[in-house]
Each structure stands twice: as C-alpha cells, then as structure tokens.
Amino acid sequence: MKLDGVKVLDLSLFLPGPMLTLMMADHGADVIKVEPVGEGEPSRHIGLSTNDLTVWFRNTHRGKRSVQLDLKSAEGQAAFWALAGEADVLVEAFRPGVVDRLGVGYEAVKAVNPGIVYCSISAFGQTGPYRDRPAHDLAVEALAGLVALNEGQDGKPAMPGLMAADALASLTALSGVLMALLRREKTGQGDHLDVAMLDSLMAWTPNATGPVFAEGRANLPKAERSWGGAAMFNLYECADGRWIVLGGSEVKFAANLLEALGRLDLLDYAKLSPGPGQEPLRAFFRETFRTRSQAEWESWFEGRDICFAPVRSLKAAFDDPAVAARGMIARDADGNAVVGTPLVFREEPGHVDPRAPDLDEHAGQGWHAARPRPPGS
Image 1 (tube, rainbow, N blue to C red):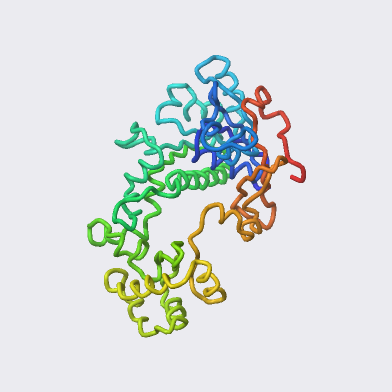
Image 2 (cartoon, rainbow, N blue to C red):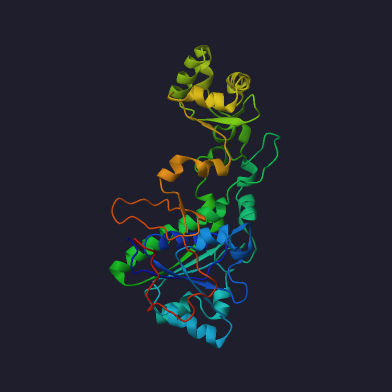
C-alpha cells in the first residue's frame, strides 16, 4: 500500500487528528494512538455503542494500535521518546503551547529526529490573536461566517449538519503531511505543519466571497446561488411532507426540466442572476412539487438529465447499494458497521481494517513489534 513503512504517532483527540491518521492507516501506515491515562480517547465514551465500543471510536480508530502514556511522568516520557525517535509523522491537537510545556514540542522532537513531520492541529493556529482561545467545531464555524450562511427557512441561522471545521482541518493536515513526506524524500528533513481549523474553513469560501471581496458587504444567503437564490439550486417540499432538491443551476438542466413540465415559457427566469428575479420560477417549482410525493417525483425524474435528489436520512444513505458498491461501508467480525475509505487507487488500494484497539492494548510493543494485519491485507 502507498504508506507501507510509514510510522505515525498520534497524540490527537476527537475528530480532526484521528481522521487524518485513520486515512493514513487505511493505506498502510502503522499508527500508534497515544491515549490519556484513565479513560483514554474521549470518543470511547461519546454516543451510541455496539459490542461495548462506541460507533464514533470504532470509526476513527480502527486499524490502529493503542498505548496509554502519562506525558507528565518519567515513565511516560521514556516511552514517548522511544516512539518519537523512530516516528515519521507525529500528530498533536493540544492547545498551542501545551506540547512545549510537556517537553514534547516540535523543536524537542526535531532535535532527536530531524526527519519528523510534526503536525499541529488547533482551532486558530500556533500564532495570532486567537491562539489561546478555546473552541470546538461550532464556535470555529461561527467565527468563520459559515453558521450565518447556513440560514434556515425562517431566516435564522441553523445548526450545521457536518463538522466542517474538523473535516477540512483534517483534510488540510493530510495534504500537508503528505507534501512534507514527499519533500523529505529529497532533503531528508522534516517540517512543522501548523493547521488551523479557522484557516481551513476560510480557504474553502471562494464561491461565497463575491459580495465580501467585490462589494465589501455581508452575504444575503437567500438571494445567492448556493443558499436559495437560484430556483434550480434549491429545496422543495413534496405532497407527503418530504423534500427534494434541484442541484444544478445550469440552463441546460432548467430547459430539460421545464420542457418536461410543459413550461418552457419560464426558462428566461432561470437565465437571470440568482435573487428576487428568479422568484416566479421558484414559486412555480414550489407549487408543482407539492402535487406529488417524494417517491413519485423520484420515479418521474428517473432517466431525465436533470440534477435532482431526494432529501434522505443518513441511514437511508448508508442503506443505498451504491454506497456499498463503492466500498464505503464494511463490517468487522462481529458485524459492526464501519465507514470505508474514500481514497480509491487502482494500484495498491487501501485496506479497511475494521477492528478498533482495546485501551492500552499495545503497551510496550513499540515500532519493532509486528503490526497486526487483517486477513487478506
């Protein structure tokens, strides 16, 4: 696999760091998760469980090893340095300054392992005025202006459905770690990667920054393409109270839909800029889609070249045979479901190891112990 032989020491907790190292483990990296002494990784105890293990922990820590270390103790420090001295990658997500106070910051690790790729993930980065401010995903999304964009039908901000700050920080960190490993092949030197959740969100706003950069004003979500201003990029309620979406505002899709509905006379509205000018077309769609159930509309759209989808639950999404066909759901020996890997290579494909480690299961093993590998890997 692509990352066979890469040794990753993971000190992070919750989502961003663990998801980063999970994707590396799926492609061959040997990941040792350092868990706090006591109850271990917090996600072991958050949310619903199957077979005495939380779904959250199983889906972020499968395929890894687990050791507990007290980095404030001499014994914990000795174990840490034995691992850090041979690691290729170290991932941490403490508040800025904590690793230095513990004596395990980048400069200290670099001194004994110059090739280390040291990745720090935090809410606001290792520098800047927000450096010491505590925050999880929701607060970061709010400060990034994204909660305000997530405006509900009542005109008020709604709770986001995805931990976007966590997710984008994780993917940003993965990209940076892989870049640093590639560069190390040429120079032999590692690097310190400073990933901020806020930065990661702000970097993904090109589609939203038109009003901000071009006109110096705040967004008006309901009048803009991505949040309801475009009739062909919108949510519509059906006769049974369920919902559908039109998800492509290209004129060709509007023409296909309006021709099928016998209302090509409305096509010019779809050619207007998103906003109030498209209201007659939005009103027609609202009225039209309330005449049939969601299932009836699914049948009606079948085979038509129009960007359409039913709004469905997460359970319905995972029950979709198309998701299984892409390998995005797997099961361990006890039948517990796990999410697959989204990185699909033709050569050297990743391998989903569905088993998650018991707390401190691999204490004292170090890198020299053979990494447990599932059958067929």
